[in-house]
Length: 444
Image (cartoon, helix red, strand yellow):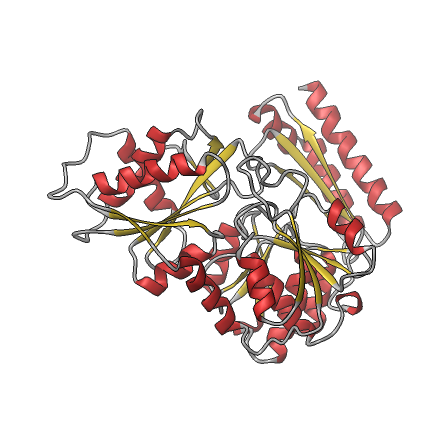
């Protein structure tokens, strides 16, 4: 059965239109009905979107209609959910969030009892159940309860992991994206001794990710330029991503943060397998740096789901994406923006992010080219002239850089990405490949 609802990160779409209360109820009921437990315990976490309460109520109704108990934890970062599932021995967690999307969107991510997102097969089964006959009524209807102390439980997990990190005297600026980290992030940084200033920490249901957070760094860069902060961290709406800005106003993306973490963990013999998993979008300079540090690198398709699968397959602990979605399985089973920020400061060991030397980034350029539909996109990518152009540019950059021409997983776009030793060469190669793509799409 082709997948219609679940993408690489759960079910996501316009709240009230695609992601309706009816759909949320059905998904929750189908997910809980699969459990072999007599009374499944299901955690529900949400971010700050105005549609969150509607979907929270709908999921709770679906859970209880299937005979489970719904435990409402309120607004928490996404990574808190798998940690709390493990801590309290729960059966399932539902996170209501659309991550870095605008407030009009929302989503549902489901985590199993082991804290990991549901696998493809399970998602297929849940989706299939929505189109099938209704499940038999449970022997008893479940209850809706408040999970008191959920925020403190999450903070306790963070504090236990980073208890040795002393941030006294460190001036930190935090951009909470008016999202799920607005309470947790400032609190844990203060507990560890940092001098904290917070921005975008007043959610109103509609301002999540609105000109703030990890996808809109302009305001953070401007504020840190005043010289009143040593480092800044910007989270996305649900708190599973983070980007940093150093004291000079330079953005430090996920590639550099992962490189810092990898070298730090290896130095302290905590990098299992001496390897790290990243995606095909990761900068060529990262690979060069890891080779010099004796760290093996595995590349996956774009998406934290694929990074996590690779880590589990290899028994490694560290991986992530350029976007700032960083997974440290030594702490938790999902990306955690707050934990990643603290790991960055731990890796610096009292140093300054401006003095980082984990990797040297190659100039990178990414161009997105719209296609009329998926069929035209595929024909262009498979055309002999496209294959020849990619092979030619790849050969020219061998050992010095790389090219990547691929289809977007979510939109009818062809993405052309080039990395080369100089910005001029990067632009030239990217322009040549872009012209080939555009010509093929026009011909089509």
